[in-house]
Length: 376
Image 1 (tube, helix red, strand yellow):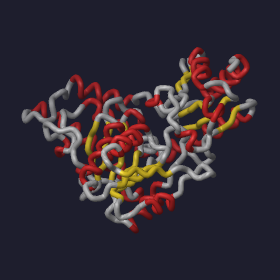
Image 2 (cartoon, rainbow, N blue to C red):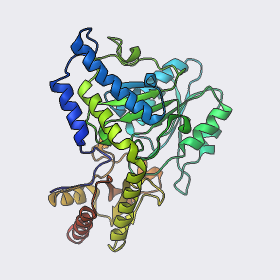
Image 3 (cartoon, one colour):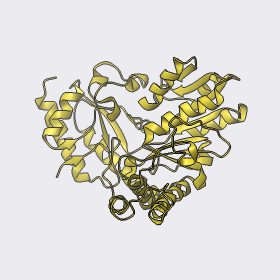
Image 4 (spheres, one colour):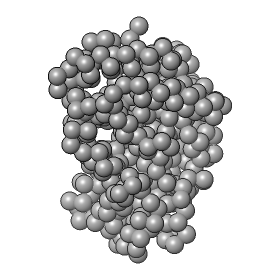
């Protein structure tokens, strides 16, 4: 069987998600906007998933807007909130290590006369809440910070930052991309201090094609997609009921086991690091206290793409970084002080609680072989 260690890119759909999607495609396949019974049955599926996801965040169902995925959720949050609040306040502050769907969205807003501040890690590779707070002023409308970096697993100080920002500037809207943290770390809307939270279904063993945006009561987000007034008019377009059903089923299946799954992932991370410590010329790029689900390493100047395809020949699947960058360097590693040949040889191993020690053994063995056989 292939060894799949690219779970930060996507996860295998769980049985509950597949069953829910199949039911919504073959039995309850109506349009949830239709007024007849078939439409009502489809709407009930959407409502159930909305409540499951809301409950998991400690929120109300009315706070959840379904989207096609995290990229759309991030776009809706940033474009929608800046349109609502950015007429007089034109500054947006983000971390310099955000996912491309945040970075490229604010880059587009920057061309539309918004001032964008990007807060980089300090020389110790960490991001500090006081650097965010020090950049906020009366002209700031939005602050966005991801919870877990998708390339290194670094956990950003979201709660500390948003709490400090809200205390001094309560009118600033706060947004968190929680894609790599949701169902892996405890994510509760109130404790994060986030007005907006982006989620993705296929990162938690759901099916590709469904995401969600949590919008705190009282926060305005203007629509980016208009048309049929679905999702309270904030996100028009017929809801993808099968994908939403799978999202809800996956969230329901994982909600009660987050702590146990975290501990298991932490055990697997320690096991892998032990294996890697026995291999010469392998450097670990992820900090010690990062999310255990993502481990970023560099392999002795062997170019990432070459090593990735060598491992692929052994049916071992890892990544050279964010899947959305399609192999191109995003600049995130450089922000964390990882440059040159070390950055060029970076690999991302991302696991789940179902990953086995045997799979990690096979990866470590193949990595060792690749280091011996690959010339550069």
